[in-house]
Image 1 (cartoon, helix red, strand yellow):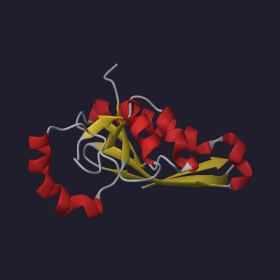
Image 2: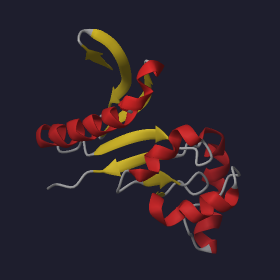
Image 3: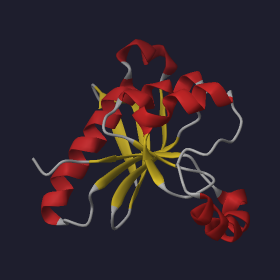
Image 4: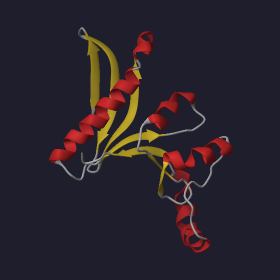
Length: 149
C-alpha cells in the first residue's frame, strides 16, 4: 500500500506500508529533500500510529505499528527511539524487549550484534538450535503497542 502526501496537489512524500493482520508495517518512506525542514517522516509516523489505533477499533487483532528496521548507529533512524512505548526484537533470542531498557547495550556494542534479551543458561541452550537456524534472517524491528485508551 502506498500513502501519498501532497501539498497543493504536488506529490511531496510517499509512505510504503504493509497492512498485516496484527500490525501496520512502515516499510519505507521517501520525500522531496527540499522539504526536509517539514520533517515529513515524523509526521507520517504519527499519522500511521493514529491510523493503527483507529483500525484497531474495527479489527482488534491489529494492534501494532511496526517502524521496521532499527540500526542504533544510523543517524537517519535515530528518530525511531523517541516513540514510546517501543520494543526491539532481540536478534539472538528472538524475544521482544523494551527499547528504553537496552539503549545502553546498543551504545556499548557500537554496531556489533548484541543480545538484548536476558535469558537463563538453560533457556539459551534451548534456543541455540533455533538461533543458529534463524540468525541469518534476524531483523531488529521497532514496534509500538498502542494503548486501548
